[in-house]
Length: 80
Image (cartoon, rainbow, N blue to C red; front, top):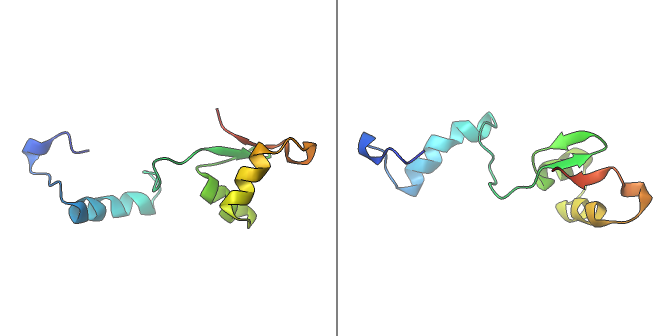
């Protein structure tokens, strides 16, 4: 995004935030860039946080279920 500095783009954080606001709203840019795509029972979620919100559990619960060896949570995994 900022590789065209000669076009008048600014490196100020507030201007970058305002420019990305609409992208975050329509989900064309992920809000959390270090997010991990998760697959739960065949349904793909863009992040652990998003999966937690859909399934009404905490993000740590999602992580624990992904790491679990229990057959009950076999469908919870990180996407490849």
